[in-house]
Length: 392
Ligand code: GCU
View: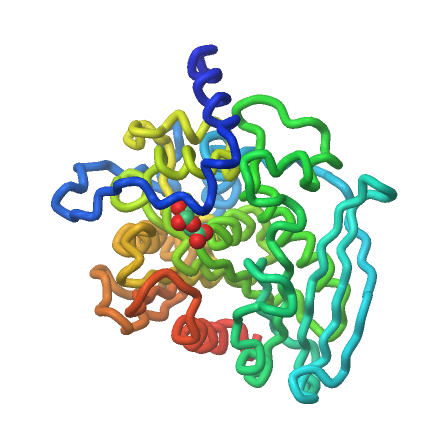
């Protein structure tokens, strides 16, 4: 599809809105009335753009999967340029008696470029001290600095998992003009309405963190569960879609541009998200503001790109902005791809009751309460990971 010049300029001017459109502003009015959800048609993840039906795993992997990745690059997140600066890993600190002696904490600087233009983040890694061999790990970017991470790290470590995390804004500060202080200064200049944005960069950063974990002999990098909450859930899904080394992906309340269907127009919409966070997506995505029916993809197809790997989608009942039902329907819409690939997918058709997790190869729960990555969510993620990542 070709963009007209006029549309390009609308999209680009949206992309240049000032940083003031940012985090502190209250969410705009949104539809939170199920009876006002318009009729919509979802694209079939198992039908190619030319109308052919995907018959088997070979057609999925060889044709439809790359086609869907291209559609998300073109219309939603932008294209991740190949190559990019190579990371350098430097262990800056090792503490063998972290968490009261139960874990070893390593602070690993991941450095891109050199000299004054270098960019860096620090990946904090906790590994259980009583492990008898390489352990599976939970990896995810965080909203806090590394000493304030709000995850139940002791519990996770006691269950035999490593934890790895870095501050999400290190490689792309989360503001409309964040690109100037981001790792993008080490890439060729961005051009056009398909140029990637912050979600793409955060996703890329997660893959570079996995590059590090592959070098750490305490960790089994073939058993890494990628987790993200909210905007970082969107980034985790996009990372898992592009980088099949991630063994499992967990989307905690990722909402619009994450697990929730865009075409339902419930809670946050394409118009709302591209206006408040113009730097997250490629400029093309803003073209679908108020025109979600024209989107050639929807988010169930992003979830399908995780198949056949275990995928967990979680919502919170009061987090209507993220559209819990739209997230459930996203997971359900990915199910046919899991089944084609010989997995059980999502074992229910109807949204389960609050606090009643459903665990197939796709997991889903809607937690009581609001927008948060809570200990109750972690309890379900640990059970899901025990089921899928243990004994492999
Ligand atoms: C805002 C935004 C959401 C996002 C959330 C978060 O509410 O509208 O899209 O998921 O912030 O990251 O917490």
